Structures are given as structure tokens and as C-alpha cells.
Image (tube, rainbow, N blue to C red; front, side):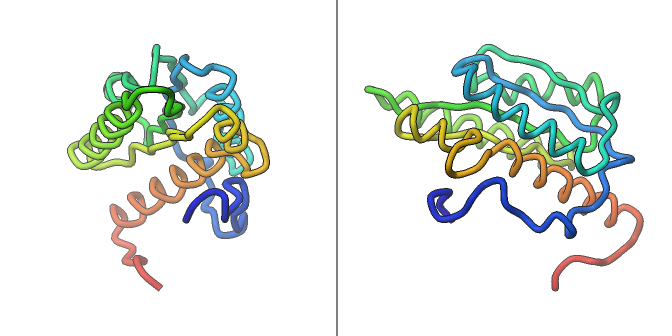
Length: 171
């Protein structure tokens, strides 16, 4: 669903498992820092809101969105979190560079998820212009960082449930 049709910060708070015993890694791209730092704040605050302990959240910065998968791999190897959240923003601009970067990040994070057997969350904004990015970094369409944190908690809980033998997939 397009974020223009759904607020990225709205979700059923009661359906989110406790993050109290979970460890998270957050990788933030420095490029478009005003936007990515707003994503980070939404993400971090949401993790804390759902019980994550500050000492169980590790954050690293990478130069740009293209470096998110590598930063995620390094953070995972050093810290072994239950989920790694990657936050960045690639604005379309005058060339097609955004398509290459967005595809590379999506593919890199999917490969990491499959190989590591844990969630690597795609929190990358892919807007056409800066205003669309601002609208999705705490503006009128909510905050993609909040959505990424909620996804990380839910996926880490799913992995834990399956490891404990609880067959709770589906409706």
C-alpha cells in the first residue's frame, strides 16, 4: 500500500509483542541526514516504547544508503542482534542512480536475511523529491522509522516463536 494511503506511524499497538528481551541493530545512512535522523528517532523511540532496553540497541552510521547492507553485515557480526534495521533515503534526482541504489540495498538486505536467518529490515525511503521524504520522516504520512521498528519487533518475535516450537503462523 502506498504511504500516501496509509500513515506509516499508525498501527495496532496492542498487537506488538514486547521487545524487552530483544536486541536490535540500527544502521543509519548519513546522506540526507535531516531525513535519516528523523527516521532514526522514530525507530529508536518505537523500540523503547515497546520495551527494548537502550543497552540492547546498537547504532552505527554509514556514509550513504548504498552502504546499508555492508554496515548491517558488520553490525550483525559484531553484535548478533535479533533484528537489524536499516534506515536511509535516496531521492530520485536528475539521473537514474536511485534505481541502482534502491535495488542494490533491497537485494543486499534480502540476501543477508536469508543467509543469516534473521530479519534485516528495509527502512529505505525512495521518494521522488525532498518533500515526499519529509512527509514520510515524521510529516503528514507518518514516519517510516516507526514502521521499520514495528516490523523488526514482529519479525524477531516470529523467529523466536518458531525456534521455541510455537506454531503460530497464519490466522
